[in-house]
Amino acid sequence: MNINYKLLGGILAFLLGLYLAWYFSNILIYILISGVLSFIGQPLVRLFDKIHYGKFKMPHTLSAVLSLIVMLIVIFSLGLIFVPIISKQADVISNIDFQVLGSQLDEPLQDIESFLLKYGLLNNNESLEIVISNELQSIVNLTSAEYILKNILGFAGTLFIGLFAVIFLTFFFLRDDELFFDGIMLFVPTKYEKEGAKILSDTRRLLSRYFVGLSTEVFTMITLISLGLVIFGVNGALLIGFLGGLFNIIPYLGPIIGATMGVVIGATSNLSLGLYADIVPISITIIGTFAVANLIDNLVLQPVIYSTSVKAHPIEIFLVILMAGSLAGIPGMILAIPGYTVLRIIAKQFFSQVKIVRQLTKNI
Image (tube, rainbow, N blue to C red; front, side):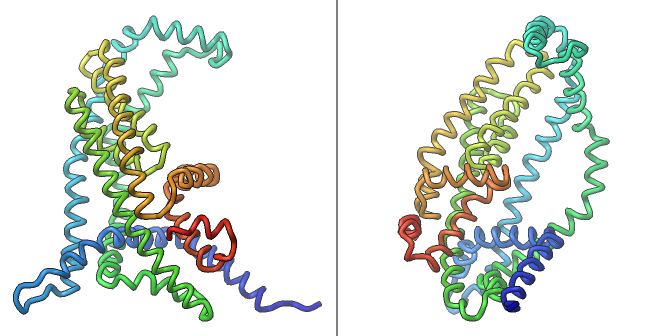
């Protein structure tokens, strides 16, 4: 029996690569995060490189340092703004008088409980009031200072190592924009180096535009949601806007998650003040604000990002996101667009003779 040792060696090398990627997944995540940050920061580096005064020209290394500092200032400024707001919201939740809340909701809960018992959605030995009370109490426990401190202390070491690794790698990726891709080229077979270089060049160009556009979309959504809620006088408007914009990274499902969290935050803020009658109007206001903001996002921001960055039709992107979500849930939805972009570039390079590939990659 003839054994193709070359093929067998290739399969074993591939399996070994998968195992190492799984075993060192945390390091791989640091590298990928740093790569994404370098995509976002490269326009800043090029902007600083253009600075000159007389014979003085901005050194490239200094441009990379300044770009990294600007990015860190933006990230830490967001932390300084929103961490106190999150802490304040935790205190608001912990100060809710659940006994008064229970008495206010007693009659509606009885109607809901009867409905659930009738259709077998609640066991006969269960009480909806007890179930809700236990769930709310668990939320309060999760927001307690003791619980948060315990988890922060346990996570501090890993967080520090992760932050240092990401900052360290991002600096070098900013300073040498070829470094990230040169590292990938080490794993490309020699006979495919030309095709590999073309794939990486196109990938860098499209993904750089995509991540810059995505960052712009997130900040725009934070601004739109926060501003709308501030106009309507909703408590916790900045926190709701921040979470709404942040969850917008998750295509299609993100706005629903953000709106749900926004309603919870708005409702708990009113419950802590004893404004039980305002819960429904506030909830409707928050949902309406999210609906308008996401309408602007879907009609203006996303078409611009998808058409100018990844060069794909919105319907095409929608179907890809649905498939990725079915395969890998929320992480799959987040990675769907950049992953699909890379696959299209690879397909164009190696399978351009296939009709469907030509159609899907004609704008790249």
